Image 1 (cartoon, helix red, strand yellow):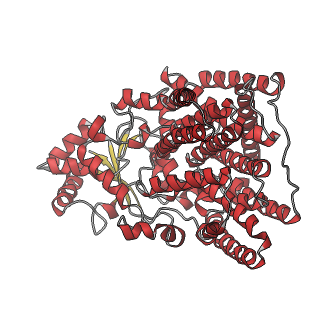
Image 2: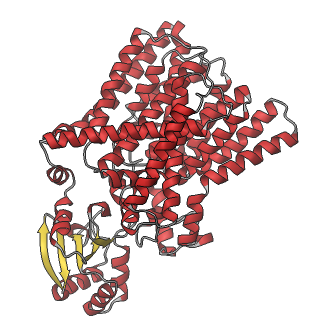
Length: 623
């Protein structure tokens, strides 16, 4: 237990040092930009966002030259830390002026205390081993492979390995220094900076918003937000960068300091370097530049100049991962747009299946389904389900309709409204997963606070809103408390429950991966079939179809006429073992045809030797 507490203390210390480095690098990047900030917290928010972007790209360029070695990454971090010292101590603090600062009420202080306890729960969960499915599939699995390979390369079978991976470059540092827990902590840091940015933006920029703490607790308690905040995903990085882009744009639209527009473009580039879903953001930026230019009667020449500068900065900060993917896979948007670009290791049938899979997310794509979409999102969404794969809760659908009665929208609310509506429409036409909507949630939470402020003088409406908000918070609180109780983090954090016991409790297949890691020969190569693609858990070389887990085995079976043909195909690819979940090979859950099942059964009897069985998981050695 004592050793574990020391380890957890070291994790927190490393996160503090990492945050110190991020802010220092961001302050250095803001040097002589002549941008006026409202508060020190605002400076920290933008500096941290810039710091994340700088560190991620520093690691990226190291990978381009096969530099993922402990020494080279350590040297890089040392150089970045020294540079951050310059940002903290040798660079003049960016100018700031404290205007429109509002006192914090007793009620707000109570909400901040509630938020503190919510964040403590999230921190404890962050200090446990990774169990997030997407983290095990690629957010951590891919940087782990890049580390082992010392640079970028084409990872066969894992289609997600060639997404924009800016956030994963940060996780690579965590994996090298201390493993998955530090990587999770880095994502949790992004969560903290989001809350800091929201708080200071509301307090110093929004005159008609008296409840900043309420907006923070609304965002933090959204079940999907709370769930991923303690996992090594990339959604909160996209949210952080999107907030930076929108907040900077709003400031530019108000004071026309060009530095804010440049900063908005930089953050937009970081967002699209982190996730494909952010590719809609640049179009909103270009539209916004034109709108502000029209509002201020800019000349055509000046407008085109601003558009050109915005676009150039955006391309510089956003394109490197797309260029890397183009070189490695032949498709900058791999695996999407396959009909135009094609793509290495991807086939037309897989591209069609993928498009079909995206369209099945949600609760239908008819006109009536789109009309009901806000209701279904708020009431019928479920975790780990095609029904949006997440939970928002009813707060927004209960409170946002009150905005209809607002008589006056200032420019901030106008920009937030346009951003949220257009982003929601884009989301509705693509993959309807709630995680992809998270970048608009901070703005919706801010909107709720503005609505409540407007109705303060209308006692009846104000009480109704408070009841709706309280009910929504209670609903969401139950879900996040259930998540906390399900994980039971305290024992593993303090060392009463060791890592292996925790993972065996949370992940049914972990015991089999633990056996593979400890008992199989080092040169083993395992073919995983219906093991949920959790390749991060496997320390031996392995292959798994990251989408449509039976695709490769069905392709082999459909082309083979005898069990010997299957044997030859597998051994030609260097496989020494097969690991699969038998429930998905035979029976009602199987996607194999009866003929394919019979061939696989015969092949198993003639060419495989059972090594270990655990529940429905079977590990075979190829004879």
